[in-house]
Amino acid sequence: MADSNFIDYVKIFCRSGKGGAGSRHFYRAKYIPKGGPDGGDGGRGGHIILRGNQNMWTLLPLKYQRHLFAGNGQSGSGGRSSGKDGDDVIVDVPCGTVVFDAETGDYLAEVTEDGQELKLLRGGRGGLGNWHFKSATNRTPRYAQPGEPAIEKTVILELKLLADVGLVGLPNAGKSTLLSAVSAARPKIADYPFTTMEPQLGIVGYRDNRSFVMADIPGIIEGASEGRGLGLRFLRHIERNAVLLFMVPADADDIRAEYELLLNELRQFNPELVDKPRVLAVSKSDMLDEELIEAITQELPEGVPHVFISAVTGFGLQALKDMLWREITSEDNRLLAEQAVHRRLDGRHRVPDEDAFIFENIPAPVPDEDELAEGEDEEWDDLDYDWDEDTEPIDFSN
Image 1 (cartoon, rainbow, N blue to C red):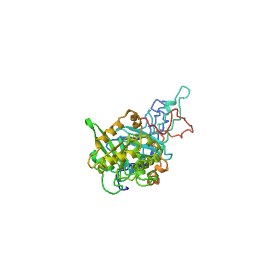
Image 2 (image 1 turned 90 degrees about the horizontal axis):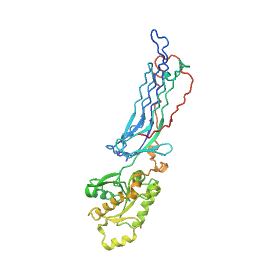
Image 3 (image 1 turned 120 degrees about the horizontal axis):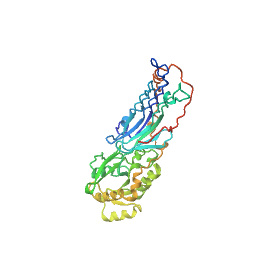
Image 4 (image 1 turned 180 degrees about the vertical axis):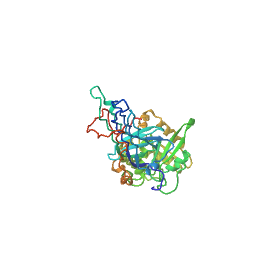
């Protein structure tokens, strides 16, 4: 998996730009010995912005760019000249990217639409120049505001595929075969477990030129929620699916037991996943006759819509599409489907290789050469100016 281009989990260090300092400049010209204060404002620091890009399918670029540093705002100068704003850092990410706080594991925000911009870290505001503080009783203010400091934060980005239907099943349950039969996707198919090593997406055509997206994830084994197999790494993609399609082969020893095993793994990974609509498909049913189908039907879990299918012969595939379409477009499930279920990143849900990553050789913020504006020879007064506005470090407004 280390050589795969599909990266759905990265940990990065971000630093917004600091605001530029306001100027304490005084106007001086021939025959105008007391021109008064005219120090300009400092420029704001650069923002860290995430932007959705529908043409991206992986977080691979961020794997080799672990440090995101925005530009600092420049200091103001005389003549009420404002300093230049710091350069923003805009990072394109795939649609479906979720942001978590690396220290606490709390969910912060997500990017789901193409072109959507998420202001991850806000740049510091520039300080006000001394001309803002002049008054009838204070005609020569020899002070100005310093710029706001930069904000540093370590975040985790998770990619969760945007799909309507998610396939859930044990290895060799026929998930990849079904995806290749109902869509143009061509996943790898073989007769050994864990053939699918990374999620696959396929667009399933339906009646009247309608369609929906189906996602195939690697097989889930018992204990996947505890890190066994590949299930733990890819179970995160199921959290965004509208409908879960459980697949159990007809030659299984106990279909009900396998279904309960899969459901229990989802419950252990994220308890809210059990609230999603579920459909049970008994695959490899081309080997069954009507008597066996009736006998197996009596043993299936109650309350779960089921269908017998065969991806090789096409048996039951149209009935499966009809059942999935009803679940996707159901009014009762529409609101639930639109709300993605994001669990908190605790110790079980993290990728050890990424969490062991240490941010070494992080350059310290370099002070601007024009920290004091042009024409200022005196030291800054030791004054503390409080900002009136809210200074929360994260602003999720577009």
